[in-house]
Image (tube, rainbow, N blue to C red; front, side, top):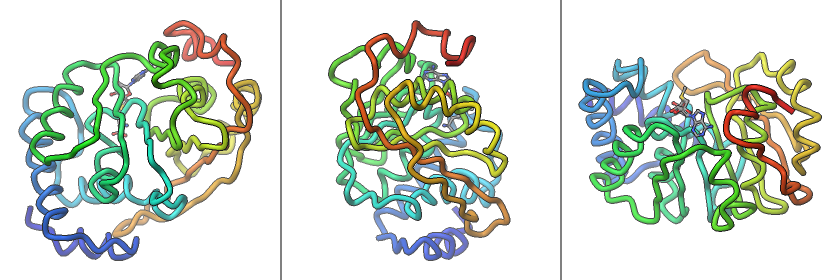
Length: 238
Ligand code: SAM
């Protein structure tokens, strides 16, 4: 990685001062991302500075919205190549992280990343969000569920809110034109036991890109019938 100072400058803006070990972990992660990207489709972003901004710093920007020191169990739904879950785990190693994706090749990649970065207490699950939510080891059991670039908010709420424990949060990484999506999702959020807590907007360091966090608080248990069977939340949003 040639642009370490650029990355350090960006992290400093988020009040993150990484150890040498953490820097090595990000370097290894970047290398694995490029190597595996030749075999499987992980990301269209490969330029080093772009990966730093659009994957690493964007993932970490969440620290402005929520205090991750208070989070024990974190679930990243539709994590793909590990965003935002892996960068958050690198900076907050105390977190018990679960990464979920429906594409098995990506899950195999994530297992290799965890092994090479020596990350402990991370589970990489292959499957659909709609299916794992029925499993009592996962349902209503996370302090925080996050998701970036997976689906529109009404569908995403049905994927994510069932996993959040009472008074925990679901935070969706959204673009700055979130308003229509949020309006469209309000009914679903309420049906699923959630309530919009706040909407935060921040600029990703080293860029002019704005990120919006829609932060939903779980205020009551999700009714048993949700999520509906795999495919329904996307085909026919609540
Ligand atoms: N979150 C990553 C990021 O921001 O770079 C990946 C985003 S990628 C556009 C969407 C990912 O969501 C894909 O890896 C896909 O396999 C996964 N996905 C889509 N629907 C899903 C579902 N119902 N359950 C689990 N994973 C899903």
